[in-house]
Amino acid sequence: MSRILFGFLYAPALCLLWLTKHAVDSVQLSAPEVVTAAYGGSVTVPCQYDHQYRENTKYWCKGKIYSLCRIVVKTPKNRPSNRSFIADDKEAGIFTVTMTSLRESDDDMYWCVIARSGTNIYTGVRLRVSRTSILQLVITTTTTTPTSSSLMAQEEIIWWTVLRWILFILMLCCLVLTHIVVWRIKTARKIWPHQQFKRQSSNIYD
Image (cartoon, rainbow, N blue to C red; front, side, top):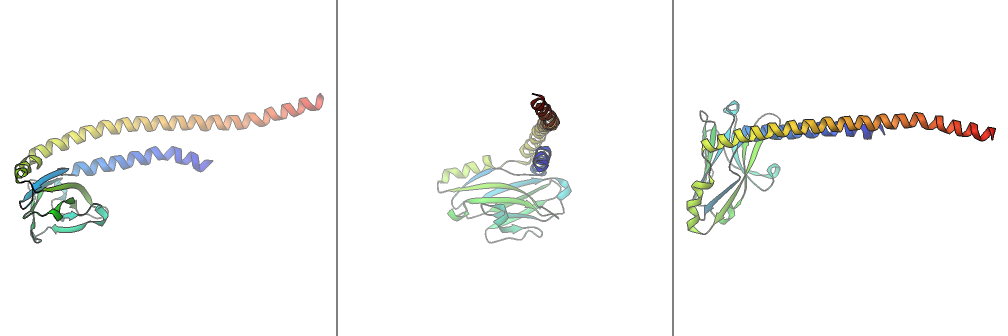
């Protein structure tokens, strides 16, 4: 019983901690969610990061699941990998990945990643490769500029701040309700033996 109550008490706190960490990571690194490019063409994806990570290694990773993804290209020294190139503008806080001569096999999930001690920071980018040449014009519209990325990051901060307060209030309500339930259970346990004793006593005299 005590383990169940312990879970009720700390589950909301753990949930709030996880959501807060996710919010912080999403603000520290941002990129377009979906980028569309034409078959045979090229595409450039900007990954904006917090300035505290300007000296960290950054890389571009391919794979539907981040933990199983394969590194395509990474910093430093702008190391090219076949048709992919990476450049890190430390002053602007943006590293960009350029992929050329796109093929159908390039249509996949990619990840902007910042390497750090402990858990890396990463965000997903879905690259869609189409054989329709007209879609080359979409590249510039689906690739966000540093200015729009900054606005998105600010909006995310505001949104997550409001959400954290809502979750905090919900967590407090859960804790209060849990304490009430525990108090009622303990009270019932104390009253029940007393009532049972009174019934037994009344039966004896009857």
